[in-house]
Amino acid sequence: MSADIRVEYDVLSRGASDHHAIAARFATLDAKRASADLPQGSLGKLPASDEIQAAFDARYQGLGEALAALEEIYGNVGDALGLTLDSYRGSDEAVRDIFTKLLSGGR
Image 1 (spheres, helix red, strand yellow):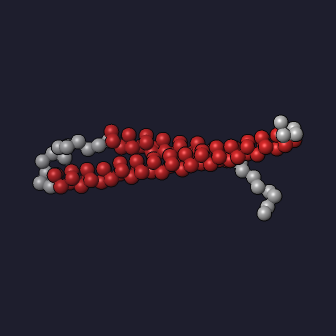
Image 2 (cartoon, one colour):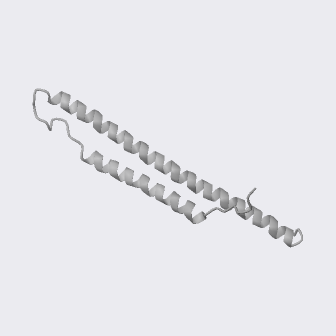
């Protein structure tokens, strides 16, 4: 086994923050998308306006679902990186405490 085991806390922390920031950007984008909705009747009374509106609404709803999924995915990755960082730090602190106790004669 390698004696050169390192965890770069700052990289994990930055990765978690970056993924949470991306998730927030998707949430903002989805809010902007929702405010740009095409209201019912805005196409007037064209012969196919109901079908056009229905197609637009379906695509728009799908876009909202996709953005929400991306927000959740990036948030989950950020959470996982944060938990990994916390776990590594906890393990390092536990090992440090054991060595400190051993070096102090078990007190």
